[in-house]
Length: 399
Image 1 (cartoon, one colour):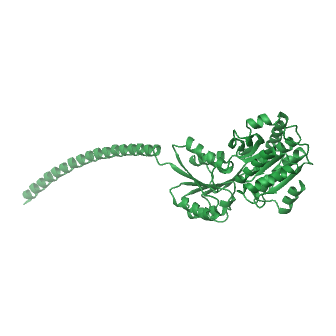
Image 2 (cartoon, one colour; image 1 turned 90 degrees about the vertical axis):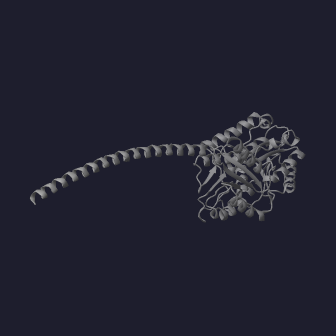
Image 3 (cartoon, one colour; image 1 turned 180 degrees about the horizontal axis):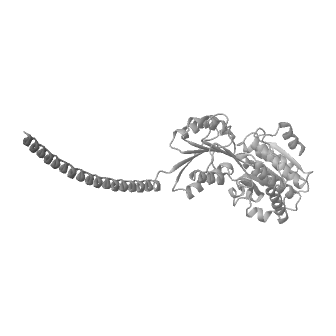
């Protein structure tokens, strides 16, 4: 019995040893296989990651363009604001065409259709929607929150960021009072010069679009203060068209001012400005244009000889800069910025007519005023936030 037990135990021990041996060999093979599989998996993942990175790089290089849509009130060909905006969009298309697709839409003059046009643009495949002027302020405030995945840029006005979530809206306006100040310095210097169409009276004029628009009154205030900077006793005739598009009324107002002794009239009336330019040519008196270099729009025509300069708002340049900043992720959506002389956003047109028709001493006076503004030695009041009594005092006091 005992022997049988010992023999059985020995057999069991030998069997166990064989089993353990087999198990050890199997474990080693499994571990080796595991290491090999793990290495292959790692290499495969590395290859996949590399291919994925290359794919993303290729997609980024040939990705879809950002679509930018411009909506303008009125139409192009206004020889002022809209044409400047159009020039900016064309520059975007030319310089950033590999990244940006451009669309430009004329909304016409029917204000009842403005909101519909904005909604159509928001419903389209546009990524960034640009519009401008105070007519579009409330519409932007209402539409933008409904489309948080879209970006909106509005120029020449601001929006009320307390009304709701307007974190997708960037607004910018211009210090037109600074550009108008230089226009006032120019006009006051011209009227006391020996230029061909200047008379002996220290009288100049201003024709604005609407007396209810702060942007227009801001130009009036700057113009008057610039003129008074040169001659405190100068007389500035001020008239309002009551519209941005009524060029016939603008012309009549300018003709009246010219016949009342003004030999230089500054116009800030948008598309209606063409009426004042026509009046200047007919009266053979000087005109200072607005928004864009209006002399260029009349190049080769008789009217150009009377447009001695223009108070420019760099709308086109500011739109280009905005899209450039947007592409770089640097445009401060949800904020408003005011751009002026220091930013190169406003100023006077420095063209061939200005340099040949306007005497050097007059141009020197304008340059001196510009340097003082930039240095902070001279400040210009603004109509924004100004109470009506003060505004009327400035305007009426100059007439």
